[in-house]
Length: 400
Length: 87
Ligand code: SF4
Ligand code: SF4
Image (cartoon, rainbow over all chains, first blue to last red):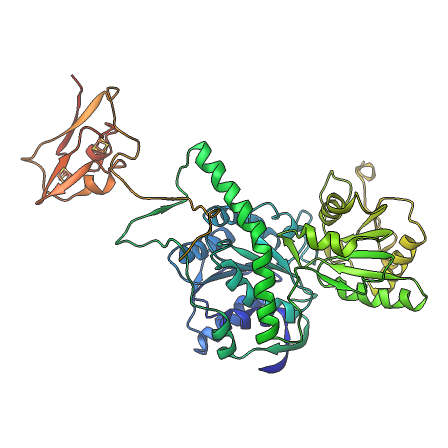
């Protein structure tokens, strides 16, 4: 085990190396590109024997990864934003075929207009696809979750693909101290890949062919059961990972609490800004306001049990969304939290912010948390940080 | 590998007549001219119903399952297969 200062993307590439991935289907897209650059570099130096398949689009990247996985090889790919959208069809195809695959998404805004900066909408828009979906809040977690993802996805109680979100640029390109496990540790943790069916020319087999209506519906139900039952698998594998590999990280739960037990108010957030939220909470705590954080680490499966347990007895919950669900009042996390705890929490408010790379600082969060505790009038607000408080956009009226 | 009872997988195996027996609705059927046939097995490769069976360098068509789609006649490089009207 060693410590190194690396970026989130490098951490993911090291996770792929340690997992002894056999095939990666690669196509570059900002801010994921340096993951595959790092993998290509390791390949050139002979540090990994992963087969790197360069393809002509993200749709093909997922198709190539899917094909390798069907043949029984541990397979990986990474993407972001428009690339994830371009993969959309294949993403459903992989989940529907019940094939273990791991993907990292360096989350980013979705155009138009063109914007390469961070937000979570690309990631959250895949939440009905049947994938297990985790979201990292620092490079260490990105590495740890990548390794655990192979074990979870290949577990016989699961057999579903898994994607890991990671805030574009904020985590993908900034460097921090990361604990890197040794190869033998991971070899001991991650058994060789197994799956119920592999394609083999000697024993021809089709996966995901035409299915009659009742058979199709039964399969969909089985995907739902597997995804819901993966909750226990995730906890079990997480506990083992914390014990054997990274004792500094607690993976025994799906979601993570901070100063929540004695809190009157709770904030719910996902991803990197959960770190700023913790600092903001410390500021409010100093003033005697009892507030805590629930960080959503797994968007799917959605642990209703854990979330209700963590938020029960709170006077109010504020949900931070770095993504949008147009036409619905509030972002996707707000909607999910509301449907989970509206019967036990008197006041649930939402904030949509940080879209398209808008910087939300600790001070902004202190301001928002204060506003919420003092009694926010609106149920959901779109918050523009002070520095960009005035946004000027031209309207067609300007055109003669 | 022990799978749990909620686990189902969308798997199918290639089989003769995946669409079932043809019945009486076929209007044309492929007839092989064995004087022309060179035994290349292109028709066997392309038949979507897997109803062409290669046997000792010759091919044989299983008419019980053949749908009369004409793919075999089209892919035959020496035009050894004719689609003829059902009587
Ligand atoms: S007509 Fe169609 S189904 Fe019949 S043998 Fe030829 S290719 Fe097969
Ligand atoms: S494709 Fe034509 S030549 Fe080739 S095996 Fe079939 S009938 Fe014979």
